[in-house]
Length: 364
Image 1 (cartoon, rainbow, N blue to C red):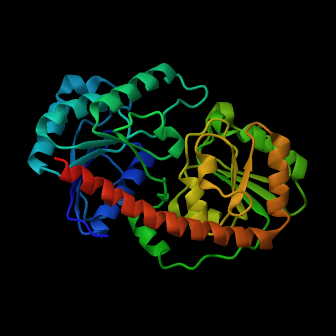
Image 2 (image 1 turned 30 degrees about the horizontal axis):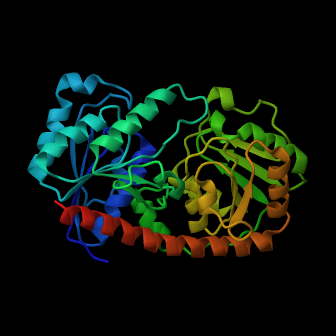
Image 3 (image 1 turned 135 degrees about the vertical axis):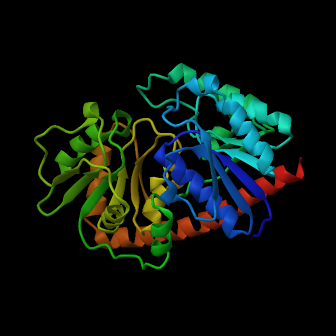
């Protein structure tokens, strides 16, 4: 599917995961023949983006996602002026910032249709911004023309005439590494090593995973927990046998090695919304073990591409780990099924994204 759409992406923070997401959307438009601009903040992670993306850093640096201070510094006016000059067919606000509903309202005066992604309809357990998130979400739903979510189950909570759904399928690599990955063959599964990847936070259930691991650890089996940790959610200094803790910001080369070196990815979350790590595992030909939390089950075919277990259930998680680590050939087959799922969903997601943009552009 081709497009001549001219997109402007708004991401008013330096949040790394949101830039991964935005870079992936922009790449889809560019590969289909469209144009993509990014209005963002100075110091954004430029290596994530295709060089064809035209970047405009008009939002003040050093302002957090929850900061209202850009309002006092004329930042909203600079965003509106940048969009006016660019004259896009569609504006896509791709990540949260406290002021984006106000930005969307101001942009409405330009007559440009606006789609706003909502990544979390509910706060993660223990989040201090819980009530504010629901208020902010309602403001987004009111100010945007379309609201994009990445779980079918969340569509019913959106205004009927505004909701849009696409699967969340972006990877965790920069632009150059993505191009290299496209030329790589899938690595075979050769070692009984499970992987937890990403920031270690309380809602991600690492404590449940550790209890499960104590039930299944066998000589020669490994569990790798890789990613920076919140101190309150960190495992104790005395780690159980077979557990490897990599408490660091993981670079792209190491991340690829971790995925290629595991038998399955484990997401024991107790309060998920969705996660792009599930399709990332599939892209590397690896099955997943996830909890029945948020939209995670929507991305897993039970017994074919992975295992779905109840949250906060160490015994059920231990059983899934036993099945995965004890049968590498089965995991190889499941990983190939996951890759086939990913390829189909990726094609559908790309077509659906371009169709959404074209529909919105025609409605101007």
